Length: 191
Image: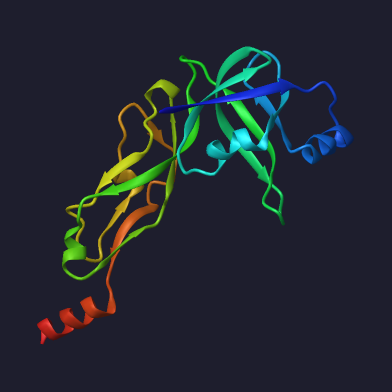
């Protein structure tokens, strides 16, 4: 997994008025959970941009007033109209405690069904997995080379070493859909 460096400053004033003042000053209020105590801190919007607006998952090295903690981004809140980041929750990670994260799915190979005129469709962009943060990859790679026309890959057929996939077993991850052209070719071949 990739790492991301983030600097923050501990918040002393909590509450609506103080939080609103921080947001006006282009700061984002954040909370770090998972340790002995919850740590409330702020960071700037510009530092968060490369962490928030990407499909990748990072281990975040949080430096809060000089104290460095490894964590993952757990929850994000956006403003409903302006899409500004309002709040972020981070979860402190340790090497002996499993964490739950959503990993992006990456399809690899040219499917047999696509060669026959079908269209490859990625139905689930992310899968929820549970495991130790040291064993979590950057993404889940699925080989679709043997996927035929009208066939699909379900979550139960996907396996990642040292990780447990938490999505529903019968959910479709990727499938090759029949196109009109493929249906027409199959109908004329059948006559």
